[in-house]
Length: 235
Image (tube, rainbow, N blue to C red; front, side, top):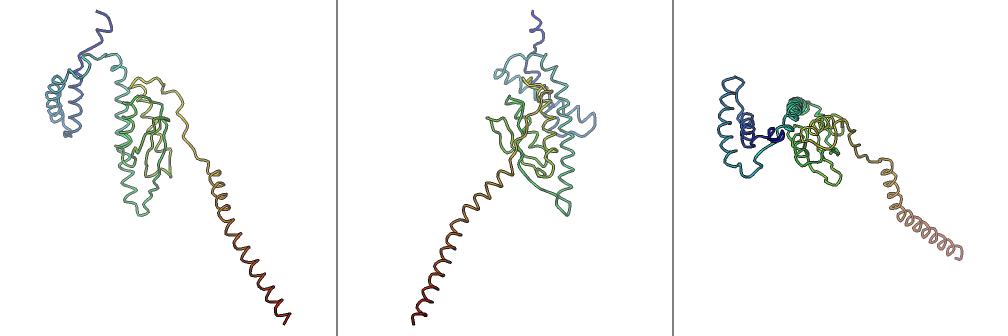
């Protein structure tokens, strides 16, 4: 038996445990050891049954090496997400209840380093689950998420920093080719000056016919006045 085969276990028990943990969060057990343990055991029994019944639709075994290596990063991802979830709830509540209503929404484009569908989906869902932000779209060509944020115009860095932290951990969790130490892609920028010049140019172009019409009208009026004066002099 090779070392690789020793490091593999059947997949359905692992899925059963994962389903039990998901049930623990969905059920919302009270913060007591008896309640948490009871809810987990119920989820474990049901989860193992469901995982065993559907074991033929996924791979029979799973390699433990990558799972063990990614577990610390997954735990950190969960803790970081919970922290952002808590702070975002407080921030949104403050902005909604504030008399000045300090809300300035905007859409922020965030290019990513992760490439796999699972990593992109995890980050996109984390953004959507966090109050105040919503993943609107994903551009596959540029690997960019478009995020609507209620404070997008006020402080864009407060929107991007949590996403970068999640992405650094997702690179490890999903065994991506990129490294967390790799520099993040630059944010797309819009040259406001060039846009302003173009708009000014369009405005000046559109105003030319109006100016020309006014000049012609003035010349016609002056011509009529000259004719009238000539007639009066002749009389």
